[in-house]
Amino acid sequence: MLRTKFFRHKLRVAIIFEKEENMKNANQLIGCCGLDCEKCDARIATIKDDKALCEKTAALWTKLNGVTITSEMINCTGCRVEGVKTPFCDKLCPIHNCVRENGLDTCADCPQMDGCPTLGRIAANSPVVLENLNKLRVETTEKGNIKDE
Image 1 (cartoon, rainbow, N blue to C red):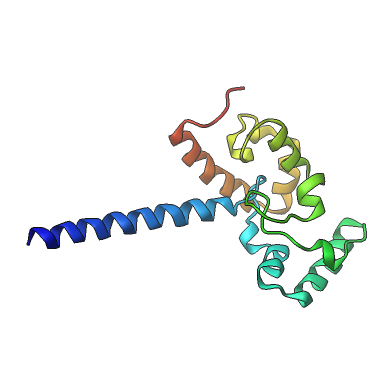
Image 2 (cartoon, one colour):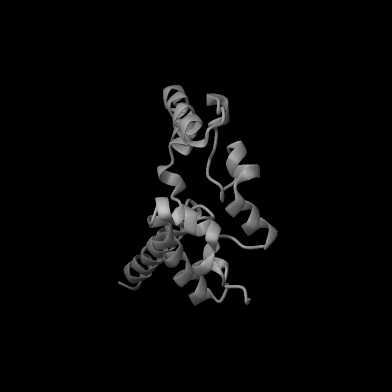
C-alpha cells in the first residue's frame, strides 16, 4: 500500500512538472512583442520544411513590407527560442532590438509597455499581442521579474 502511494505521488509530481515545462515552452513561443510565433507561417514553414509555404510567406511579406523577401529568408524558429531567425526578426525588428538593448525577455517585462508607441503600432493591427503580453506580465509579476522604471 505504501509503495502504491509513493508511485502515485511520484506520477503526480511528474505530471505537474511536465505541465510546467509545456507552459514554459509555450510561453517561449510568444514573441518579444506578443505575437504568437507558434502560429507564424515562417516558423511553421521552417519546422515542417514546407517550401511552398516559404514561397507563399515570402510573397505576402514582400507585398506587406514593400521590400523583396525571398523564400530563403523565411527560415525562423521563433524570436525567443534557440535557432534560426528571419533577417527582420533577428536584426531589424524594433521591438526585438529594444528588448535586447534593455536586457528584457519581452515587452511584458517593461514598465513602459502600456504607453509604448512601437508596440502600439503592432497592437493596432494585432490586438492579441496585448492579451499575450498581459498574460506574460501576470506570470512575470508573480515571479518579481519586471524591471523598475
